[in-house]
Length: 142
Image (cartoon, rainbow, N blue to C red; front, side):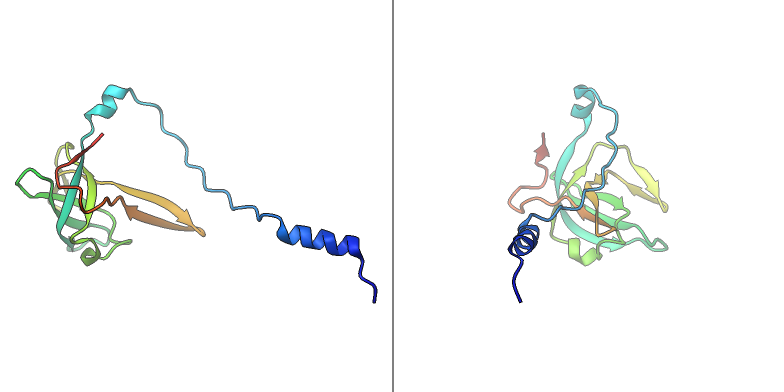
């Protein structure tokens, strides 16, 4: 049988053409804020000293953190669906440390762990923002 060169070349070019990447899900942008408002937020490097699941909660983990002040900081975070507590002990994360305390399940949470949420193959994923372990507890992000 004869080979149809034009057909074969078209098939080879189609196979070699770069595949179109799936589009990232677009996240609507929030309204801009003034720079002085951004400057009010205190992002602090924290070392995870302990982490445990909060009783009677499917979502909450309770972190005990070294935030460089000499006093341990307690922060609750709704990430139990994504992490086992033991995976986080010893890690170096970023937290907002100048939020007023907020009671969750009767426990004070004194800050917020920074995480990134995205979708992979239609499944929601969450990753805590971790930094190099050489960065000391208490370092500020600017």
